[in-house]
Image 1: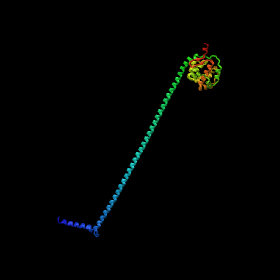
Image 2: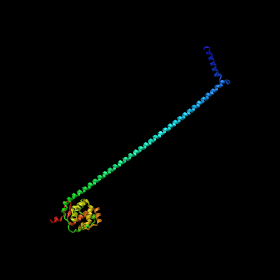
Image 3: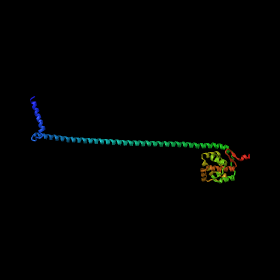
Image 4: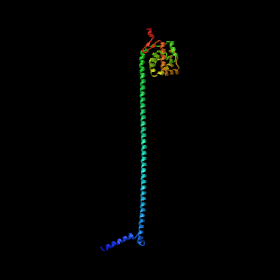
Length: 287
């Protein structure tokens, strides 16, 4: 082994020298052809491998691009889905807000209607109370008025109206009020029922108590009928009113009608109606 090893090393050294120094220029050696052909095969293989690698790289890039595009499309789809969900949610919120606003408006409307209804009921109750209070007050005052004045006042009976009473009845109701005494004006405007019932009773066309009730509950109708259907104006020095004129005066200026008839009655009897009694009563003069 020790003998052969130096020889082998020399041959290897020679072969290495030949391969590196001589072989490159020795074109007659078939080994060169083989070597170059081997190099070509290696180059082609390397080129093939490079081409294959390039194709694989391109394929991988295409796959990556497609994957990225797919991911982008998926992301875009997700974004669109999210946007659609957001739009749907916003629309739902808007619908909810509209529903809440409509409900609030309906509640406000119901509250306003309820308040108006309560106010109307309260107003109706208040109006009814005022009306009934007026009826009660007038009936009570009618009782006091009868005790203080009516039962002391002389009845007209068949007495002829005086010239002053005739002159009073010739004027229209409004102008005649300007010539009525202050006491009769006050009673006619503030206590029209008892004052009118007093005139009906003293003239003899209607008793005081029915007249008081009628003038309390149906004042205009009673006054219209008494002036148009009875001899009230005739006995006081005037003429019976036609129905239309009587209705117009009774409804538009009932206090003026009552004051005119009251003053004509005083002028005919000679008595003077006071606030708390009768003045100038002929019976007092006879006494």
